[in-house]
Length: 220
Ligand SMILES: [Ca+2]
Ligand SMILES: [Ca+2]
Image 1 (tube, rainbow, N blue to C red):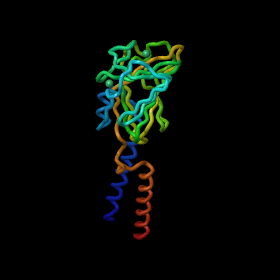
Image 2: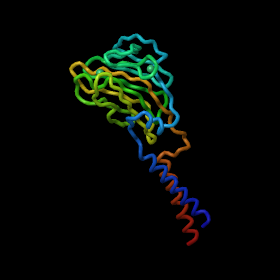
Image 3: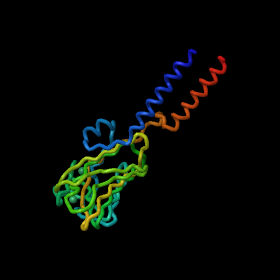
Image 4: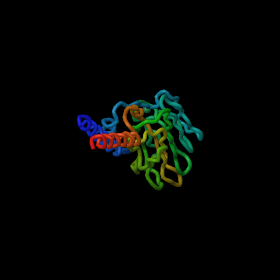
């Protein structure tokens, strides 16, 4: 009987952990709220890249925590205002344009739980649809909506249940595309392995039930 109460307490605790994890993923549009919820974050502002103020059809950049690929054309700019796009932190930012639809893919070297950045100048050119995001874990949604020239929109995603390693931004379709830029990228590492995954919780829970049944049989 002495062991039953701690075991039940542990089961309730594990249930609470599972419930909390089930709340993911969460999308943020306020940077301060995102930072408050995400905990310790890394930061990338593209300041170490050489700014060319021109776009390339095969743009890729390797940063400290991720690689970045823009299509159909992208480049690093440091102009104060390039037709509405501009830096959020420091001087440099990444501009994406060209074709009728634009893509920007972040590939992290290790899975992350939190990702955030500021998107600039989205939705001021005729096109169809919001800027969407898709992760390699299958999470998808809206990253930015149409806004006036030079507008800034924060997009953040926290998914503690399924850490992700790639995230792609994709514009809607337009006759001339919709150039936009990004800067001030924030990201977290994945959770410590000590936090149980839902599958592990289930296994541990089954073990507890088995122990309790065995104890009942012994008592009976
Ligand atoms: Ca910057
Ligand atoms: Ca634009």
